[in-house]
Length: 280
Length: 94
Image 1 (cartoon, rainbow over the protein chains, first blue to last red):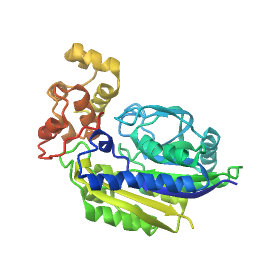
Image 2 (tube, each protein chain N blue to C red):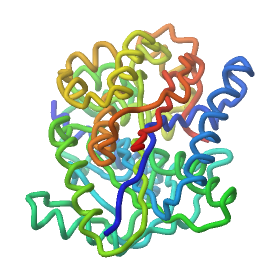
Image 3 (cartoon, each protein chain N blue to C red):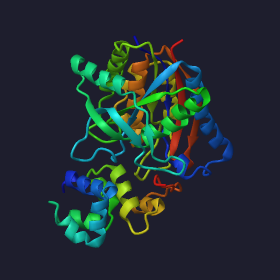
């Protein structure tokens, strides 16, 4: 059976690509290097596929349909929101595993919305380019990537408890998949950032450190216990993306996380945290 | 004021090329296709992103709409319109 053997929690900050020189160079380098560390560790692992848990930013899904959770089961390309250094490309999806996760969900109480053809946004494409594609370059092996999108930025939001349950369902589905392959899961988002509101540029390091501690202690219940009001007040509307962390953590089921890097970067309007979810 | 209709219009103007063209050609005519009142029309034509957020429109849509459709498209101007003194004005658009 297939197995989820590890994962990461990483940000997906588009401002890094638009204004790479905005922060001081040393701080910027630490952030870029953190992605490289993740890529190296993925390359060193035996994983042949990655599930990236991200969220739409009201670009992919419109007012006519706003899914709570969606998985791409067919052709994938992206991102829709191309950036300097992040151009649209074809994505090697693991269609068989994605379809299996959706079908397994139907049998276990999780009615996935499926995208038979999907265009990602930066929530998927930043970690895909900087971690998955880079790991392919380092290791010389092919690594497929499955987009999972949660309603973490556009209401009605998926509840944090449901995001946790969904992660558990993903793990159960992977473990029921007839294959000996190893899978990584990346939770893409956060931490504190205020998007499109007057507080934009504010970063709350104290809140970010709280989230990091909970993630490193594998304390999913502690993350779920935050009310949305607390998250919005202390971490901004962008921090609602901790749902993506919760889902990934529940999928990996690691006993702990290791902080790779944290940088509060107001110039990039985000507190940027990188955590490895370690199984061993 | 219908937040839902405002969001539908802003989403169209953020991502749909045909809608953008029609809005640029004749914004009043474009908006006449939607069931919004005079206040809604005013907010869209005046790029009143603060007013739209006050009626519940998602900030990601007001930002996307501003970047795609406003006269100067700069986030620094958007921030001022919101009453923000944020010095951080990088756009999410490349």
